[in-house]
Length: 280
Picture 1 (cartoon, one colour):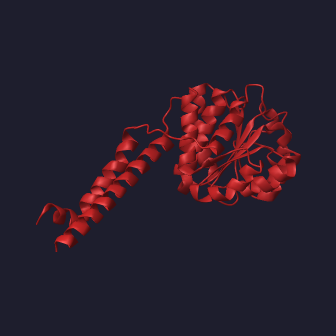
Picture 2 (cartoon, one colour):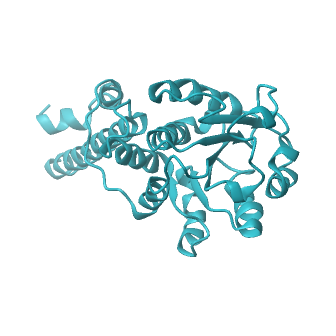
Picture 3 (cartoon, helix red, strand yellow):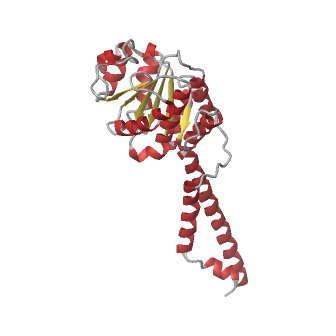
């Protein structure tokens, strides 16, 4: 059996092992492959980058669950790092019942790195059922919808929210959305009805649905899937706002190496097939 015949009959176990090694290595050792930042991601970054200590707070809505965590959770972490590095106050909430646990995880991870205090620099409203009533009610009076925060403290006694009334007191809303309810509800009730500034982070499969609203200006900027998360991480890192772990960037490196190896195997397999068939 010659070389090409051996290649054409390579055991699939070796292919799986090679692919596993190529995917796991970037997750353990960051490679830092160069990344092109898309304009839609840069728009959202630039919007937050214009804000500062005296700006109105940014509202981040965690509208996702653990299944979409690889794509959307790095966006949440990167957005918090950017806001805290710029001394922008942050208000966090969720339209999904699974969202508060993920939000709490990020809020326990990021604020200590920037010496931010709960109630002064950020607050967590938690989750409530009833999307339309919540979003329309917040346009009238936020404290009417959320009289207390996630931990049971009255919003009137929290420095960040004591003087907050409605969307006019929020500089930007960012919906990290894995489905419905998510960015469509925010676009319909907060942006279209109350003209609130809206940014969106969504899974890659949903990104095409958001593009028209970015073009019309109804959406400030868009982070699309893990690539959008890695782009935002890179912008935050290059601006020296954070030197922390960039999970989405490592995930993109793993994807890139995995795809490269699959392409190599496809090419080698086809070459071996045609050479062996020609000899026969």
